[in-house]
Image (cartoon, rainbow over all chains, first blue to last red; front, side):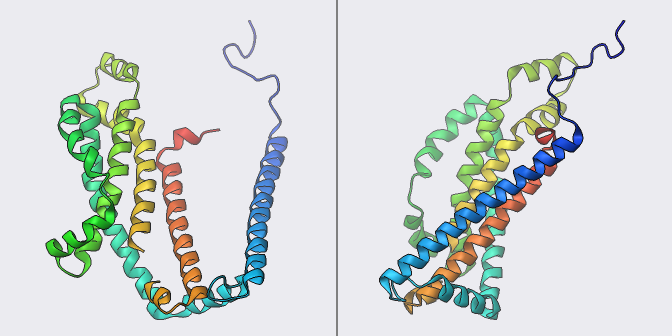
Length: 216
Length: 45
């Protein structure tokens, strides 16, 4: 009988030192590409600024760097940034609280999907700026309209990705869990949730960037 | 940002755009980090 029966070895597996070296060279290559991309962008920007020679149309990278330096030291700018971050986080929390449960329900049940999809399908096509006057009437001036808008733009990517994630879990996993005697709660926590989690996080990333873009 | 826009301060406007982009990018990176933490099984090499 062979010594390592059942174990699987690739014939071309590299020694650990070689793997570390190739990882290091890949990281180096990535950094080099980033440097080239940023360098090219800066060069093009500088050439455009030199061509226009007008600060109003195209300021140079150096002028922008100076403005960035002063903005970073300005207390008012920093406090506004903090306020915006707080609003985005609250709006995102509202979006998660709505999007994830509704997405799960729509992914699980075709009836829920058929009931909710005709509403959210057209609703998410409404331009976000069209909501602004209505939100001011509903919530008055202050944080209310902003929070509503952030939650509005962030909810749909989270909801749709959650639904897609739940639907993408293979049926075999449910059958396997069921055959091993798993209950509803166990199936949810050990099969559905881990299976849908990557899509939920993708939705979170999309929702967050949409919320951040809409509030600035 | 709107103040910079109305006062035609283009360098400040671009600087604030860069700042917003950096903050958004950092938040995105933090979510990616969170993803690596809670879905470890996907990143096992």
